[in-house]
Image (cartoon, rainbow over all chains, first blue to last red; front, side, top):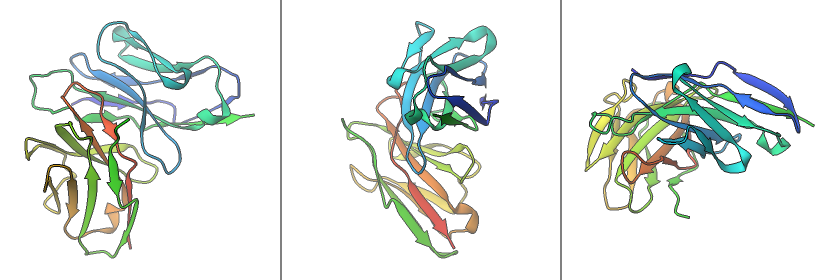
Length: 118
Length: 113
């Protein structure tokens, strides 16, 4: 079964500092990979996704992520964090095996809460 | 931009009562999902629905749960007899094809007293 690990439960950075949120997945084939952001009491907003092709993907709000197959990782980065980036971030994995029985369900990591100090 | 909508935004119910959570997926989407998020925990898959039938369900989705697409636009999750542990945020999602990005609704917060 696929699984997703976000090793950092809580990260605190200063505004303007760079950010990297870690995500590791466990799955036998190439997965579809996503990062979602959730502000308190809100739904899930897609930041970016990787399906295939270029392993460095750009998303909204200045975020990017790099798929590294050898490390089974899909870490999220931002060069300069803004106070409005404070939220919870979820990495998620979906199956890429179109012939499989799983119709696109996502498996989420535990989430990383990002706090931004002024 | 089209979006997934969910009603109500917050539902409070007594233990043992039935609740129906409603979702309107994006109109040309074909695959529909329910997820839940217990406070402070990760988002968990409940069920997927395609071609008017359940295509996959998790171990959480027991006989107390059911889903339905009663017309061309709504997608509902029914909990027959709610338990305290059903208190959670429930998210609906939809995609047009299996390899697409899932679009999530804003969620329904269910509180069981």
